[in-house]
Length: 322
Image 1 (cartoon, one colour):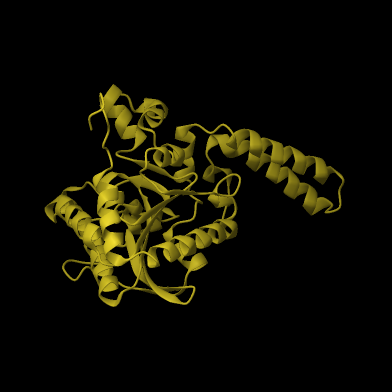
Image 2: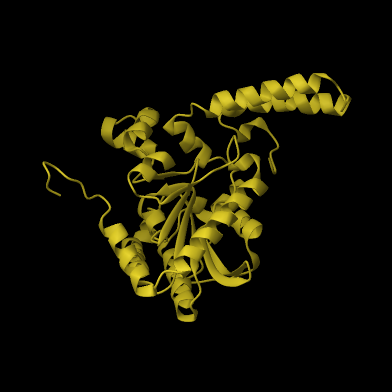
């Protein structure tokens, strides 16, 4: 796993894997040809299969928040070429919780936009823990409109616990910025692919999350509010977050069944943070496949389908009536 320096980077349920990896590394350092390695690797594979075959919803939330999980910039560097970051909303400032710019995907120019979290404490402060201010959403919309003008497809990466809820954000029009983005994205005259790579938190995710195809990584989550917040609201007890995660149906499998996402993108066994390159390779193929489909669809039909897709979310039937 890239950059892992201590066990503190792992949730509790992953610690047995970390421990046996350390044993394997110790044996390799001592004797790379040791016959003990075969048994240790067998044991490691068994532990991984056992843990990841029975993950709870809240354990998937923990994986989605994993500090070593790939972030938007990692995907940009691993999937696209010649990325040129564009800054600012032309009204207030440059929100570093959302990054975006032009890039090349298989020789074609695309606009890439996404939430960006940090890894260190300093980076997280700089990126506001991936929670955008209004200027972040306005920057995102400015880049989408630029892509529309030149006919570039838009690809967005979702990874945020939610839009920043602070007083300054509200003073600068947080709800208006998100609402404007929703309206404009529904009508944007270019192809749009949305990929949920970690946390998809409420309006903070939707602010750059309206698209023709919604892809979701296998261990990502998507929710109206965090399980901790839901637990505090429903039971006035934030310790019931695990129960809240089950109740809210936040996993990729749940959301695919409800028709919220179009496709689940598989991750390496153990999660995306165990093998960046494999994750990038799988996702690159799925982006290429879906972009090809969208490009073969007539523009008017594309925009009609996008509108109906989101318009029909939440529709249900009771006694034969919708």
